[in-house]
Image (cartoon, rainbow, N blue to C red):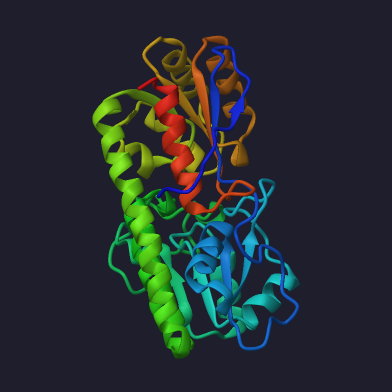
Length: 325
């Protein structure tokens, strides 16, 4: 049975502006580390999305530290602290998103001299970023490196259900190598997670049959994989999205085109990331609200009180409600 999930509503001109948020703390150890509990596998994750997955698979046999766990933290620009460095130095397993999304963690692993055999990268596991085996990272001379973006890759792979299913298996396998006595439990927890995830995949695919081909406007690429799987068409001008990905202001003409798109009457909702918002996206949100277009909010860490499965289930519920299907 699918876990309970609730709708989170925020005010809007249309009377319906729903929050699809990934904000708050994960299911385990979202803070720092004080050396860890003896006998438990020490896991450090870049965000509480992956920290929650590790806690779900590892149960009482792991202690998880999630470095990014607040709405105020932007993984693309996060600067690691001495406490983060200590946590990584003591970790048995490190879980990163990869693809330039959380380069601070990759750097901490290198500084600590950790064996990359024990670094699990979601981008590598996904297969969405090219050949697996070495996590795609921005080149030092890449003009986008400061923002952490790898050219040609949408690195927000946790919105792809299939990727998270693969990650569950990889995490269970690695934990089993480190703690053979609990390997059977890790496998069972992974299987239970997969069963619930399969139910979400079926729900997602059924929703896609009802909402597919609807036009939306995403203010950044975070929810790309979920929108794509639902058959929704992101009509946001490419020049605007490119500027957002590069962490820069879009040209006035691109902003005007996006404004016209939103107010033109064909867009069903605006997908909006509050965690990385700026003056231009705030302006476009206001345009949507003035036009009576629903604003659906996406951020990048777990909502308080939810795990990955319940959060993604709420996302599907919210999209279904926005599109009234």
